[in-house]
Length: 414
Ligand SMILES: C[S@@+](CC[C@H](N)C(=O)[O-])C[C@H]1O[C@@H](n2cnc3c(N)ncnc32)[C@H](O)[C@@H]1O
Image (cartoon, rainbow, N blue to C red):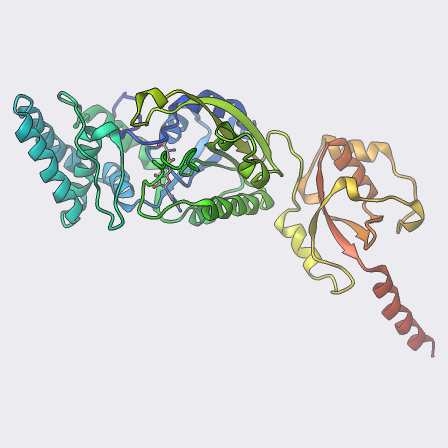
């Protein structure tokens, strides 16, 4: 058993160490009080993962994922073959350090290893060791590949960089024993969610300028359509009751009229926080920038119907009722004569819903085609009390509904 605390073993663009305090401030109470699963679909160097592993004893399990197969191979090798990896890293470190006084040979050695890495013909543990070697010796710890997945970062200028960190690799290996390691698209992580899951998303940033596109970590670009696909995934998680927090660059810093993320995540809470970016080729541009922290739990504006309750409404006869829809609370009209039950509502019942909120009893309210409330007055009042901006509704077509019923009744009477 090693006593050392596991910390990120790579330098990585967008490392989140700087944002940890802000992220922690945004965390929900549920992860301090109950066991939970932590899921990081864009793990990169895992700055948040390691911090979570070290600081959250209630974390039962973690699930990490990245689309970069070479990176995921490093995690797996550390988890399952740390000794084999370290023995290769030790050789690489000794050889590289021995060339400290011979700059040309040192350079040659770096490019030779880079070429070897790009053949991807070696055993997985050798590939993992070469990945770490390149990360420690390249320019600014960048990971950048060309269209053919060829790693193309030039050598950095470090004297005797640490390549083989025995203590940390063993500590990381031990910490990874409760981590499920996946390789693929972020959407794949959904099936690993538990009842109490917290997702943290740190996707490739939307570039702040055309030239600052250091977001090509993998050969596939993460463009605006991908950012939209991610938002849709976040909405799916929200509708299933999973909690998530996401960071991204604040494009408003560059252009105050750019509402890309404000529009995309308008249903959720968006905070702007200061963060230092450490990877920038130009040291003058490593200044302070705003980052966005977006989450679906800190102040709720919408509580989606849980899957089980939603299903109950899929059996309602069409076209008399629509499927469950998310609807703005402020657009719901009220006329007591249109209610299905005209009894006055009890304020203690509204208190009960707000104070002892229970997802199991949170079902859609019913409105008519003119947005007048038909059923669910207590729930609507509770939604207003909780400052929700949206509520789930089913829209009932009252005309259609009465017509066939009356025909039926006539038949019975005849
Ligand atoms: C901003 S980095 C993550 C940085 C990380 N949080 C850290 O602290 O180092 C984004 C990561 O997303 C990965 N990625 C890009 N597209 C992806 C996708 N569609 N699914 C999953 N991972 C993806 C990249 O390989 C990269 O490692």
